[in-house]
Length: 326
Ligand code: DGY
Image (cartoon, rainbow, N blue to C red; front, side, top):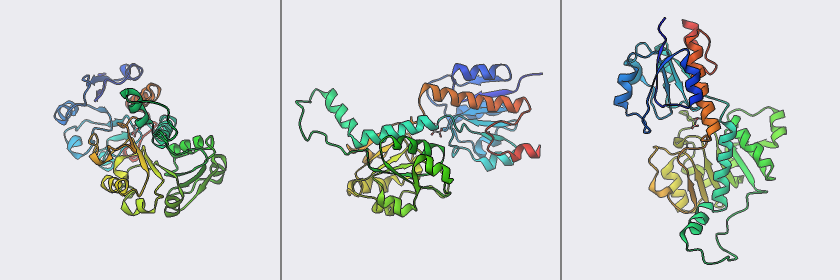
């Protein structure tokens, strides 16, 4: 029996390639840059599997040229790049990589939080520039993190991992979410459930951990920034379109908030020029980018593909109704 043919839009890591090799015949995109759409579409035409990054739109345009496709495996937990309903309609399984990146992403939300509070980017620039003349009492004074109030918007796995770290900084942790966490989780993380507007007004740091959904698109808009303290910071490691970037720039310019730490943007890789300011720490969507975690993410995507082609249920299936129907 010929092996099912798979296109991977990335060369992946060796560990993931090992998982795939026995079951599938994989064509890897080997160039360092992301493949342009006109390179992807002809490659998926005759493939039964696709392993893709979050930069690839899995939509009707792609699905319609890939009649044999049975699985689109995203190497990411967020799957706003996948039109899951369109996949389901065409009987294509969609999968993601939940769980393995929670701690690494939480670490990075904290990296941004600490960096913007303590003005690390400015300090590093001064240290590297050769312009640092002497220690001074009020040089690059930032704001304390310990003992402050952390507001977490979206209290899923990553939000909770961020909360766990806050306990070490003796912070008050408040959160909001469409669903209140079980009492034992709140107790263990010393986290209180607050309604959104109250959380905005109370928090010194707000860290966003919601998926991008129609109801979370531009969740952070001008009225929300108005409710925040002028001394507060916004940290976003979720998805860029959750924040109205123009409104954020206006809030920063109007000193309605003190600063921001951002890993994600509305139109990546474009970054609104108004965000390139001293009180904003910018990162290029790398919150999950540790070698350990990215390797695990690639392996999970590979395992999802292999499971399907071995007649098993892919562990991270997003549309299980596809399997029920077949
Ligand atoms: C994801 O997995 O959704 C991230 O944005 C990349 O780790």
